[in-house]
Length: 131
Image (cartoon, rainbow, N blue to C red; front, top):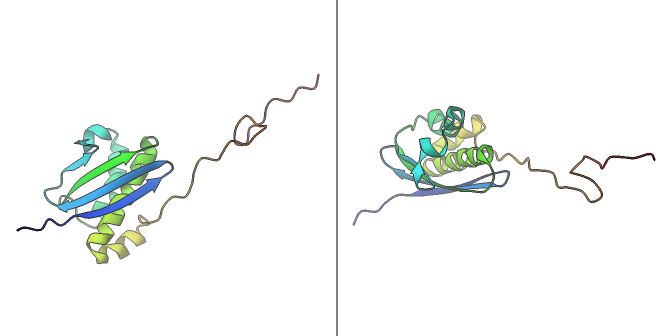
């Protein structure tokens, strides 16, 4: 019986969550059961996501399957990148030092500020009328 090695990690950014599964393979990437290039058509998004693989010189060594939920495209890209970096650090502990130096293992804590009562938004007030 052949044992399939699978590395899993979760990445979060804003309200997006990405569950990343790595298996040794040819380098195919699927996002929500769709090809990577179709799900993230922007080239800037693709380069941002693939940054952990380029830094660790593991391009084309793993098949990546990702399930992304919540948020917009920017949040999903950030969540994917963090999840991928975490999965790579799990599969080979020597990668952790490289990824940490490239600042790819830190979660971005910035979130949308909540709307306050008696105001139009988080900071914007209702218009003041003198008369």
